[in-house]
Amino acid sequence: MSLLNPISPSKLRSDLYNFPCDDDESTTTAPPSVISVLASLLDRAIARNDRAAVNRGNAAVGDARSRAFESHQVLDMTIQSFLERIYRYARVAPPVYVVAYVYMDRLCQYNPGLRICSANAHRLLITTIMVASKFVEDLNYCNSYFAKVGGLSARELNSLELDFLFLMKFKLHVSVSVFESYCSHLEREVSFGGGYQIERSLRRLMCGGEITAKEKERREPNPVAQVL
Image 1 (cartoon, one colour):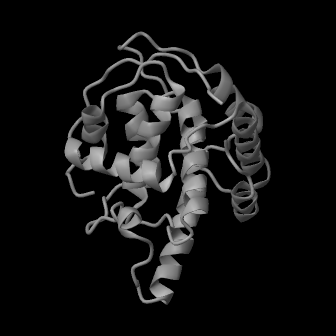
Image 2 (cartoon, helix red, strand yellow):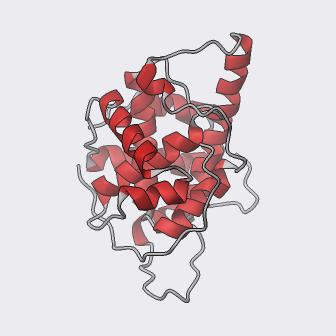
């Protein structure tokens, strides 16, 4: 894996487990390193799935619920920038991103026809991170706030959340052991650039534990064009 600023496994683990609580609105905290690692993994998966879609002639796959995440116009924002935007305005804790990654992996296991691609990545991310935040954190922003961060209407995000829950069979529990396993895989990613090997390994994990996280400060997001 190639990152502009190399991340060591110890730095990643420190961010995941010892991320400081920033109560001072005047202080700007750098995004946690898990964002860069997750963005790198997702970028490769998206590139691979986009190529596969072209090879099959962009034929629609999946049921109506999974296709609900597809956008007619792709947001002109990289995955890294989109994740950083969510962190900047929603201040979700680093474990939330790991749980969101568990959810996306589980989502693809339960729905083999669903592939994360450029057409659905942003909608999937804002939905999974919002749901993961509800699972991990004691205090959460409302759906309408997450919708504003993600460039959607509240009604759209509410509908996507419902579709997501049904696609997930309402199986949102993530045990501590599974969470630790995914953290270990992410650490291996920054250690060895495991890439596709790690993605295959993640698909073999079945998920099934609650993780607590700290409170966040509220910040008003700048509007994103509602094109998702």
